[in-house]
Image (cartoon, rainbow, N blue to C red; front, side):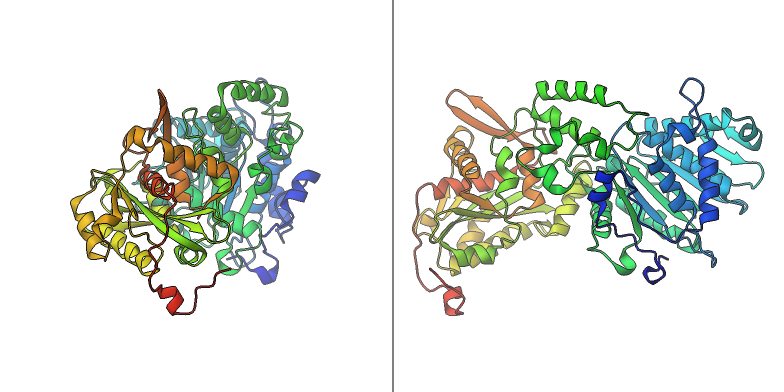
Amino acid sequence: MANEDAGWVFACPDWWERLQAGESLVPDLPLDEKAAARAVAIFNKLSLPDVAGFPRLRDAAGDWQRDIVAALLGSVTADGYRQVRKLLCMVPKKNSKTTGAGAIAVTALLVDASPNQTYYLFGPTQAIAQRGFDQASGMIAADPVLKARFAVKHHVKTIADLVTGSTLRVQTFDEKVATGVIPKGIVVDELHILGKVHYAERVLGQLWGGMVSKPDAFMLLITTQSDEPPAGVFKAELDLARGIRDGRVTGKAAVTLPVLYEFPEEVQTDAEQPWRDPALWPLVLPNLGRSVQLDLLEQQFAEACEKGDGELARWASQHLNIEIGLGLHSQRWRGADYWLAASEPELTLEDLLLRCEVAVLGIDGGGLDDLTGLAVVGREAGTGQWLAVQRAWAMREVVDLRKDVAPRLLDFEREGTLTLCDSATQDLEEVAALARQVRESGLLPEKGAVGLDPLAVGGLVDALIGAGLEDEQLVAIGQGFKLSSAVWSAERKLRDGTLRHDGSDMMAWCVGNAKAEQRGNAVYITKQAAGKAKIDPLVALFNGVKLMERNPEAAGGPSIYEERGLLVLG
């Protein structure tokens, strides 16, 4: 395994300076120079099978791809351990990503003298897997020497080395791929698509675990950025790689070599959107002038701008690796444009109760297939700005019933903003417990303290009364057009900075799912897509905002925070 004391350090904190200087994103590593040079030489001799004249990769590929080849295949030390066992490369679309994946897989097969080894090239869909196989087999067909050495079995997408008996199998990633597999090398193309597959993290973990018996095995993950907010296995691997790159993750956990062609967060999230300047684009396009052309990108960019923010966000995610924070579709709620900028990630419920002079609750939820959403909205003492903390609950079986959103729900569970419930009443009981906590703070008004959907589950009302709330504190909030004022209040206060929230990924997802429909003088907030696009926690926020619009005053009484000497005003 990677030994930091021996110089195998994968951190690259100066990565942005390297990109600006046109330098490699692979840090200086004590590679076996002879083995690395041999692997690069083999890679360079491979030909592009779908380009006139079959140009060799020495001309068609960029140095960035040779850096990856050298790091992966030149990192086996004298004791037989491969030091670069996992590598995540994120590069924008059309930078010869799938072709490079096929070429690296073929190169790995050629440099390995061990007999009867198994290599895999996985695509997340049949079309991507077929593309990978076509590129790998086409490189072999274009070279008479390789054509004689390998047997290409098109019907099973397998390439067999007639000299060593080793194989390269190209297949679609599914739940069965990990069964009985002990791979020597794995290449996974378009990891971001697997982030939307509920079983992908478990299967990829099994594949990674299956490599433990081979100290010289490797896993190469190649992807573009996701066209939706990152989720599932893609989010987990990307967050880890960024942590290693930036030096925040060290020691035995720092096993992934990150090669991430992206802009710094401040460039991606700045309200002025500096990434729109084509002068910056070459920094994240390592194959520029080969498989991707700047003038064609500029044409596509102009077209995307004309189609609106939703299409621009999608285009930027694929061609510039801009991470989408919200689903900025054309019918989005206007508050989505200001949501991310209004976050205070360190804000907790306890902080809110300490800082505020009054607080109300908004609750929304329905059947067992929905989320139950809770929002605590407070008015900060001294500033008058509104603070919001949100939580959600879902029945555990929803993870199996709604496989399209399962990776996201599991992400939110890890984040601590969503609870997967094992009993039919767990959500109601925990909502009531949080309501009791707010009541005990002394910040709830005597009337109009909790806003509920008029169709609220009867058990919820019982649970709230059981938590010590009075009937007059519970208010049925009209939905549909009757929420218009709360919708407008929230978006205006987000824009002027007087509504702050806890910045959870869960709420960003819900906000991105919201669809705003103007009907006459009213606005209706609905789901962008039926079934999978949950917005219940956002509606809970609107219910709370509806009560806060009344300018409530706290009922007073002893606060548990005051009793503990924690309440400080002024």
